[in-house]
Length: 153
Image (cartoon, rainbow, N blue to C red; front, side, top):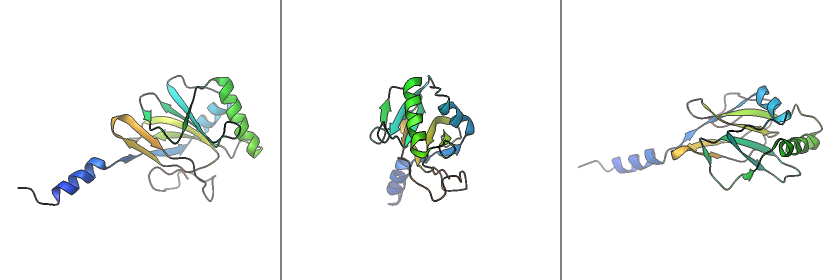
């Protein structure tokens, strides 16, 4: 007979999720600014199309959990409009942050472009990825500063 604590522990382990990370990348920023669409990625955005707050591209080997992000049938022209709309809000591009979304093992799962510097990235079973909406940080230009997994700083 098993001790009573085995069942709750087993349930907790089964429900455990793994967190990924977001790392700043000038190469990703430049690719967005050149309006390069990654053929093997599905694109998503948040915020109104005229004033987006973030663009997300997830590799097709993953499925983004629906609900928080709207899918975008991305073309170079549409990406140009979205990036330009983000730039117009700020008046300059250095504050817009490109980043690599990495899974818990460090493998690239997607890319991110936003002027907000924080998000949480969770990897669930069957290659489902959950990316929270972007959030403000006290200092958006500081990244990879040793925060908890899934947060960009």
